[in-house]
Image (tube, rainbow, N blue to C red; front, side, top):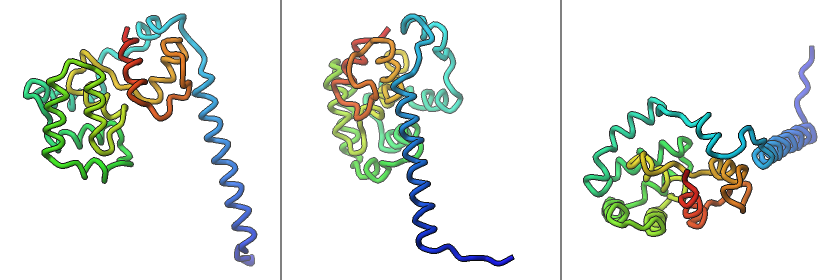
Length: 187
């Protein structure tokens, strides 16, 4: 059996096929998220049937580890980085997170835990490099799990599906407005 080396044309065809397949997968995922089917009459019924009552083991350990953060009034850089890594295990913004100075993290977190305004909390957390609504909501959730939940693309899509919000069905590029609307629609 003879081995025939791939030509540049062969490689280009493979790349085009792979690129087309990747595009089809992305399109399929996007369509699936937009066209999810309601399985329950409303979001309350969904939560009654699907809400996890017990945290995942790694999340439970992290919540326990962070239980002193809110009473102390601030979080440290290692605590901040741990929450970021928990929310984004691929660590796509790790260099941004690490660029935050200890003093910035402590000062901003002190302000976050001192304020009573949801808008102010999210704006403050968003000042930290690499933090957007999903990580900011993770910080609040892991330090006060009784009061908060993580808001990310999947949660937003479910809120949209059940009519709790009426814009941005894909839930991409979550903003302060998204955060405030999700807080306003807590069940």
